[in-house]
Image 1 (cartoon, rainbow, N blue to C red):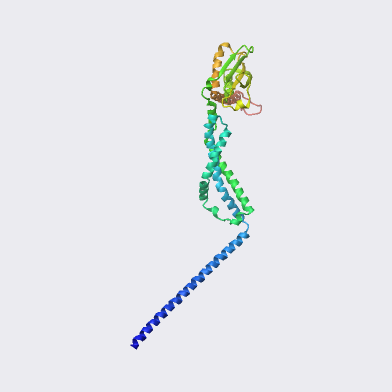
Image 2 (image 1 turned 90 degrees about the vertical axis):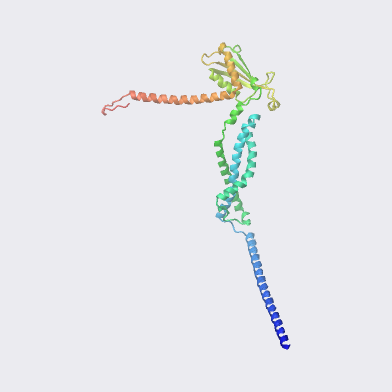
Length: 356
Protein backbone atom coordinates (compact mmCIF):
# COMPACT_ATOMS: atom_id res chain seq x y z
CA UNK A 1 0.00 0.00 0.00
CA UNK A 2 2.77 2.40 0.88
CA UNK A 3 4.67 1.42 -2.24
CA UNK A 4 1.64 2.16 -4.41
CA UNK A 5 1.16 5.58 -2.74
CA UNK A 6 4.82 6.44 -3.35
CA UNK A 7 4.57 5.64 -7.08
CA UNK A 8 1.47 7.79 -7.42
CA UNK A 9 3.26 10.70 -5.74
CA UNK A 10 6.23 10.31 -8.07
CA UNK A 11 3.93 10.33 -11.12
CA UNK A 12 2.14 13.50 -10.04
CA UNK A 13 5.46 15.19 -9.32
CA UNK A 14 6.74 14.40 -12.85
CA UNK A 15 3.54 15.74 -14.38
CA UNK A 16 3.78 19.02 -12.48
CA UNK A 17 7.45 19.33 -13.37
CA UNK A 18 6.67 18.82 -17.12
CA UNK A 19 3.97 21.46 -17.04
CA UNK A 20 6.35 23.84 -15.32
CA UNK A 21 8.96 23.34 -18.03
CA UNK A 22 6.33 23.95 -20.78
CA UNK A 23 5.25 27.12 -19.01
CA UNK A 24 8.83 28.35 -18.82
CA UNK A 25 9.36 27.59 -22.55
CA UNK A 26 6.17 29.48 -23.44
CA UNK A 27 7.22 32.49 -21.40
CA UNK A 28 10.65 32.45 -23.05
CA UNK A 29 9.10 32.32 -26.55
CA UNK A 30 6.68 35.15 -25.76
CA UNK A 31 9.56 37.20 -24.47
CA UNK A 32 11.55 36.74 -27.68
CA UNK A 33 8.54 37.66 -29.89
CA UNK A 34 7.86 40.71 -27.77
CA UNK A 35 11.45 41.86 -28.04
CA UNK A 36 11.44 41.34 -31.84
CA UNK A 37 8.17 43.29 -32.20
CA UNK A 38 9.58 46.07 -30.09
CA UNK A 39 12.75 46.22 -32.21
CA UNK A 40 10.64 46.29 -35.43
CA UNK A 41 8.49 49.15 -34.12
CA UNK A 42 11.58 51.10 -33.14
CA UNK A 43 13.10 50.54 -36.60
CA UNK A 44 9.93 51.74 -38.39
CA UNK A 45 9.74 54.79 -36.16
CA UNK A 46 13.35 55.57 -36.89
CA UNK A 47 12.71 55.36 -40.66
CA UNK A 48 9.69 57.63 -40.38
CA UNK A 49 11.65 60.15 -38.38
CA UNK A 50 14.43 60.05 -40.98
CA UNK A 51 11.97 60.54 -43.86
CA UNK A 52 10.27 63.40 -42.04
CA UNK A 53 13.61 65.05 -41.45
CA UNK A 54 14.58 64.58 -45.11
CA UNK A 55 11.33 66.14 -46.30
CA UNK A 56 11.76 69.03 -43.92
CA UNK A 57 15.16 69.81 -45.42
CA UNK A 58 15.16 68.21 -48.90
CA UNK A 59 18.26 68.05 -51.00
CA UNK A 60 18.10 69.98 -54.29
CA UNK A 61 17.31 67.67 -57.23
CA UNK A 62 20.20 66.77 -59.48
CA UNK A 63 20.35 67.76 -63.16
CA UNK A 64 19.53 64.20 -64.17
CA UNK A 65 16.47 64.19 -61.93
CA UNK A 66 15.27 67.50 -63.41
CA UNK A 67 15.69 66.21 -66.97
CA UNK A 68 13.80 63.03 -66.10
CA UNK A 69 11.04 65.08 -64.50
CA UNK A 70 10.78 67.31 -67.60
CA UNK A 71 10.52 64.25 -69.86
CA UNK A 72 7.86 62.77 -67.60
CA UNK A 73 5.81 65.97 -67.89
CA UNK A 74 6.36 66.20 -71.67
CA UNK A 75 5.14 62.69 -72.54
CA UNK A 76 1.40 63.21 -71.85
CA UNK A 77 1.53 66.63 -73.55
CA UNK A 78 2.81 65.00 -76.77
CA UNK A 79 -0.29 62.83 -76.95
CA UNK A 80 -2.58 65.71 -76.03
CA UNK A 81 -1.09 68.04 -78.68
CA UNK A 82 -1.25 65.38 -81.39
CA UNK A 83 -4.88 64.49 -80.70
CA UNK A 84 -5.79 68.16 -80.38
CA UNK A 85 -4.54 69.10 -83.85
CA UNK A 86 -5.70 65.86 -85.47
CA UNK A 87 -9.29 66.17 -84.30
CA UNK A 88 -9.43 69.92 -84.90
CA UNK A 89 -8.23 69.61 -88.52
CA UNK A 90 -10.55 66.77 -89.49
CA UNK A 91 -13.57 67.97 -87.50
CA UNK A 92 -13.10 71.56 -88.69
CA UNK A 93 -12.78 70.42 -92.31
CA UNK A 94 -15.92 68.28 -92.05
CA UNK A 95 -17.88 71.14 -90.46
CA UNK A 96 -16.60 73.55 -93.11
CA UNK A 97 -17.83 71.22 -95.86
CA UNK A 98 -21.26 70.62 -94.27
CA UNK A 99 -22.49 73.28 -91.85
CA UNK A 100 -20.16 75.85 -93.41
CA UNK A 101 -21.76 75.35 -96.81
CA UNK A 102 -25.30 75.22 -95.39
CA UNK A 103 -25.05 78.32 -93.18
CA UNK A 104 -22.23 80.16 -95.01
CA UNK A 105 -19.83 79.86 -92.08
CA UNK A 106 -16.28 81.08 -92.48
CA UNK A 107 -13.36 78.70 -92.29
CA UNK A 108 -12.29 80.23 -88.96
CA UNK A 109 -15.77 79.63 -87.52
CA UNK A 110 -15.63 75.98 -88.63
CA UNK A 111 -12.18 75.64 -87.05
CA UNK A 112 -13.49 77.12 -83.80
CA UNK A 113 -16.32 74.58 -83.67
CA UNK A 114 -13.85 71.82 -84.48
CA UNK A 115 -11.75 72.94 -81.52
CA UNK A 116 -14.63 72.02 -79.21
CA UNK A 117 -14.46 68.39 -80.35
CA UNK A 118 -10.66 68.61 -80.24
CA UNK A 119 -10.69 69.56 -76.57
CA UNK A 120 -13.09 66.73 -75.76
CA UNK A 121 -10.91 64.24 -77.63
CA UNK A 122 -7.80 65.43 -75.81
CA UNK A 123 -9.44 64.82 -72.46
CA UNK A 124 -10.79 61.40 -73.48
CA UNK A 125 -7.63 60.04 -75.15
CA UNK A 126 -5.00 61.89 -73.13
CA UNK A 127 -4.55 59.23 -70.43
CA UNK A 128 -4.53 56.40 -72.99
CA UNK A 129 -1.82 58.01 -75.08
CA UNK A 130 0.17 58.85 -71.97
CA UNK A 131 0.14 55.18 -70.99
CA UNK A 132 1.16 54.14 -74.51
CA UNK A 133 4.07 56.58 -74.64
CA UNK A 134 5.29 55.63 -71.19
CA UNK A 135 5.11 51.94 -72.06
CA UNK A 136 7.11 52.62 -75.22
CA UNK A 137 9.74 54.46 -73.19
CA UNK A 138 10.50 51.25 -71.28
CA UNK A 139 9.80 52.81 -67.90
CA UNK A 140 12.95 54.94 -67.94
CA UNK A 141 10.99 57.99 -66.84
CA UNK A 142 10.23 56.31 -63.52
CA UNK A 143 13.89 56.31 -62.55
CA UNK A 144 15.39 59.15 -60.53
CA UNK A 145 12.08 59.93 -58.88
CA UNK A 146 11.65 63.13 -56.95
CA UNK A 147 10.28 63.22 -53.44
CA UNK A 148 7.16 65.18 -52.65
CA UNK A 149 9.21 67.99 -51.13
CA UNK A 150 11.56 68.09 -54.12
CA UNK A 151 8.62 68.39 -56.57
CA UNK A 152 7.53 71.55 -54.77
CA UNK A 153 10.89 73.21 -55.27
CA UNK A 154 11.15 76.04 -57.82
CA UNK A 155 13.64 74.23 -60.05
CA UNK A 156 11.35 71.21 -60.31
CA UNK A 157 8.33 73.34 -61.21
CA UNK A 158 10.27 75.15 -63.94
CA UNK A 159 11.53 71.84 -65.35
CA UNK A 160 7.98 70.47 -65.44
CA UNK A 161 6.69 73.63 -67.16
CA UNK A 162 9.42 73.56 -69.81
CA UNK A 163 8.81 69.85 -70.42
CA UNK A 164 5.08 70.43 -70.87
CA UNK A 165 5.65 73.29 -73.33
CA UNK A 166 8.10 71.26 -75.40
CA UNK A 167 5.80 68.22 -75.34
CA UNK A 168 2.65 70.03 -76.47
CA UNK A 169 4.60 71.91 -79.18
CA UNK A 170 6.05 68.68 -80.52
CA UNK A 171 2.65 66.96 -80.39
CA UNK A 172 0.89 69.79 -82.24
CA UNK A 173 3.64 69.75 -84.88
CA UNK A 174 3.09 66.04 -85.39
CA UNK A 175 -0.63 66.72 -85.71
CA UNK A 176 -0.02 69.05 -88.67
CA UNK A 177 0.79 65.95 -90.74
CA UNK A 178 -2.99 65.55 -91.08
CA UNK A 179 -3.02 68.50 -93.48
CA UNK A 180 -1.59 66.17 -96.14
CA UNK A 181 -4.78 64.07 -95.94
CA UNK A 182 -7.28 66.95 -96.22
CA UNK A 183 -8.55 68.53 -99.44
CA UNK A 184 -8.35 72.20 -98.52
CA UNK A 185 -10.11 73.35 -101.71
CA UNK A 186 -13.14 71.11 -101.26
CA UNK A 187 -15.01 73.47 -98.93
CA UNK A 188 -14.41 76.46 -101.20
CA UNK A 189 -15.71 74.53 -104.20
CA UNK A 190 -18.82 73.41 -102.31
CA UNK A 191 -19.52 76.95 -101.11
CA UNK A 192 -19.29 78.27 -104.66
CA UNK A 193 -21.74 75.61 -105.82
CA UNK A 194 -24.19 76.18 -102.97
CA UNK A 195 -27.23 78.10 -104.25
CA UNK A 196 -30.39 78.08 -102.18
CA UNK A 197 -33.61 76.83 -103.75
CA UNK A 198 -34.84 79.32 -106.33
CA UNK A 199 -31.77 81.59 -106.15
CA UNK A 200 -30.62 80.61 -109.61
CA UNK A 201 -33.87 82.04 -111.00
CA UNK A 202 -33.41 85.39 -109.25
CA UNK A 203 -30.66 86.64 -111.58
CA UNK A 204 -31.45 89.16 -114.27
CA UNK A 205 -29.18 90.30 -117.09
CA UNK A 206 -29.80 93.53 -119.04
CA UNK A 207 -27.61 94.59 -122.00
CA UNK A 208 -27.93 97.99 -123.71
CA UNK A 209 -25.94 99.54 -126.57
CA UNK A 210 -27.70 102.94 -126.39
CA UNK A 211 -26.70 104.24 -122.96
CA UNK A 212 -23.01 104.77 -123.78
CA UNK A 213 -22.31 105.36 -127.51
CA UNK A 214 -19.64 103.01 -128.82
CA UNK A 215 -19.80 100.87 -125.68
CA UNK A 216 -22.03 98.13 -124.31
CA UNK A 217 -23.61 98.40 -120.86
CA UNK A 218 -24.28 95.13 -118.98
CA UNK A 219 -26.39 95.20 -115.80
CA UNK A 220 -26.59 92.05 -113.65
CA UNK A 221 -28.98 91.79 -110.67
CA UNK A 222 -29.34 88.86 -108.31
CA UNK A 223 -28.58 87.44 -104.83
CA UNK A 224 -25.23 88.24 -103.25
CA UNK A 225 -23.27 85.01 -103.69
CA UNK A 226 -19.49 84.65 -103.40
CA UNK A 227 -17.76 84.26 -106.73
CA UNK A 228 -20.46 85.80 -108.97
CA UNK A 229 -18.46 88.91 -109.83
CA UNK A 230 -15.33 86.89 -110.60
CA UNK A 231 -17.42 84.46 -112.65
CA UNK A 232 -18.90 87.19 -114.86
CA UNK A 233 -15.54 88.93 -115.26
CA UNK A 234 -13.83 85.71 -116.38
CA UNK A 235 -16.69 84.96 -118.79
CA UNK A 236 -16.48 88.41 -120.43
CA UNK A 237 -12.71 88.02 -120.83
CA UNK A 238 -13.08 84.57 -122.40
CA UNK A 239 -15.60 85.95 -124.95
CA UNK A 240 -13.31 88.69 -126.22
CA UNK A 241 -14.70 91.59 -124.21
CA UNK A 242 -12.67 94.27 -122.42
CA UNK A 243 -14.09 95.87 -119.28
CA UNK A 244 -13.89 99.67 -119.45
CA UNK A 245 -15.67 100.37 -116.15
CA UNK A 246 -17.18 98.31 -113.37
CA UNK A 247 -19.57 99.36 -110.60
CA UNK A 248 -20.59 96.76 -108.01
CA UNK A 249 -22.77 97.07 -104.95
CA UNK A 250 -25.90 96.05 -103.06
CA UNK A 251 -29.16 97.69 -104.03
CA UNK A 252 -32.54 97.75 -102.36
CA UNK A 253 -35.84 97.07 -104.02
CA UNK A 254 -36.21 100.77 -104.91
CA UNK A 255 -32.78 100.86 -106.56
CA UNK A 256 -31.16 102.72 -103.64
CA UNK A 257 -28.21 101.21 -101.83
CA UNK A 258 -29.21 99.57 -98.54
CA UNK A 259 -26.25 98.93 -96.24
CA UNK A 260 -28.10 98.98 -92.90
CA UNK A 261 -26.84 96.55 -90.26
CA UNK A 262 -30.31 95.03 -89.86
CA UNK A 263 -30.55 94.28 -93.55
CA UNK A 264 -27.03 92.84 -93.80
CA UNK A 265 -27.60 90.53 -90.81
CA UNK A 266 -31.11 89.50 -91.82
CA UNK A 267 -31.55 85.95 -93.06
CA UNK A 268 -33.91 87.25 -95.79
CA UNK A 269 -32.28 90.53 -96.86
CA UNK A 270 -34.16 92.91 -99.11
CA UNK A 271 -31.05 93.86 -101.06
CA UNK A 272 -29.77 92.25 -104.23
CA UNK A 273 -26.42 92.33 -105.96
CA UNK A 274 -26.22 94.85 -108.82
CA UNK A 275 -23.11 94.84 -110.99
CA UNK A 276 -22.76 97.29 -113.85
CA UNK A 277 -20.19 96.48 -116.56
CA UNK A 278 -19.28 98.87 -119.36
CA UNK A 279 -17.51 96.78 -122.00
CA UNK A 280 -16.36 96.81 -125.59
CA UNK A 281 -15.25 94.29 -128.17
CA UNK A 282 -11.53 93.66 -127.75
CA UNK A 283 -11.00 93.09 -131.47
CA UNK A 284 -12.90 96.13 -132.82
CA UNK A 285 -12.60 98.46 -129.86
CA UNK A 286 -16.30 99.27 -130.16
CA UNK A 287 -19.57 98.05 -128.69
CA UNK A 288 -20.55 94.44 -129.05
CA UNK A 289 -22.47 93.80 -132.25
CA UNK A 290 -26.25 93.83 -131.82
CA UNK A 291 -26.53 90.32 -133.25
CA UNK A 292 -24.22 88.97 -130.53
CA UNK A 293 -26.00 90.58 -127.57
CA UNK A 294 -28.42 87.69 -127.04
CA UNK A 295 -25.66 85.07 -126.90
CA UNK A 296 -23.57 87.28 -124.62
CA UNK A 297 -26.51 87.75 -122.22
CA UNK A 298 -27.06 84.00 -122.00
CA UNK A 299 -23.43 83.18 -121.18
CA UNK A 300 -23.38 85.94 -118.56
CA UNK A 301 -26.54 84.55 -116.98
CA UNK A 302 -25.05 81.05 -116.95
CA UNK A 303 -21.89 82.40 -115.32
CA UNK A 304 -23.93 84.15 -112.62
CA UNK A 305 -25.86 80.94 -111.85
CA UNK A 306 -22.76 78.77 -111.62
CA UNK A 307 -19.70 80.74 -110.42
CA UNK A 308 -17.74 77.49 -110.02
CA UNK A 309 -17.44 77.05 -113.79
CA UNK A 310 -15.89 80.49 -114.10
CA UNK A 311 -13.31 79.66 -111.43
CA UNK A 312 -12.49 76.44 -113.24
CA UNK A 313 -12.15 78.40 -116.47
CA UNK A 314 -9.89 80.91 -114.76
CA UNK A 315 -7.71 78.09 -113.48
CA UNK A 316 -7.50 76.64 -116.97
CA UNK A 317 -6.54 80.02 -118.38
CA UNK A 318 -3.79 80.44 -115.81
CA UNK A 319 -2.53 76.93 -116.59
CA UNK A 320 -2.49 77.75 -120.32
CA UNK A 321 -0.59 80.97 -119.65
CA UNK A 322 2.07 79.03 -117.77
CA UNK A 323 2.31 76.54 -120.62
CA UNK A 324 2.59 79.41 -123.12
CA UNK A 325 5.49 80.93 -121.18
CA UNK A 326 7.25 77.55 -121.10
CA UNK A 327 6.67 77.08 -124.85
CA UNK A 328 7.99 80.58 -125.60
CA UNK A 329 11.17 79.85 -123.65
CA UNK A 330 11.59 76.57 -125.50
CA UNK A 331 11.07 78.22 -128.90
CA UNK A 332 13.66 80.87 -128.05
CA UNK A 333 16.16 78.18 -127.02
CA UNK A 334 15.56 76.25 -130.24
CA UNK A 335 15.96 79.44 -132.27
CA UNK A 336 19.31 80.20 -130.63
CA UNK A 337 20.52 76.66 -131.28
CA UNK A 338 19.46 76.93 -134.92
CA UNK A 339 21.33 80.20 -135.35
CA UNK A 340 24.45 78.68 -133.78
CA UNK A 341 24.28 75.81 -136.26
CA UNK A 342 23.98 78.27 -139.17
CA UNK A 343 27.13 80.18 -138.22
CA UNK A 344 30.65 78.95 -138.88
CA UNK A 345 33.68 81.04 -137.90
CA UNK A 346 37.32 80.37 -138.76
CA UNK A 347 39.78 82.74 -137.13
CA UNK A 348 43.21 83.64 -138.54
CA UNK A 349 45.99 81.45 -137.06
CA UNK A 350 43.60 78.85 -135.71
CA UNK A 351 43.12 75.36 -136.98
CA UNK A 352 40.30 74.77 -139.34
CA UNK A 353 37.60 74.50 -136.71
CA UNK A 354 34.09 75.69 -136.90
CA UNK A 355 31.67 76.42 -134.16
CA UNK A 356 28.16 75.66 -135.04
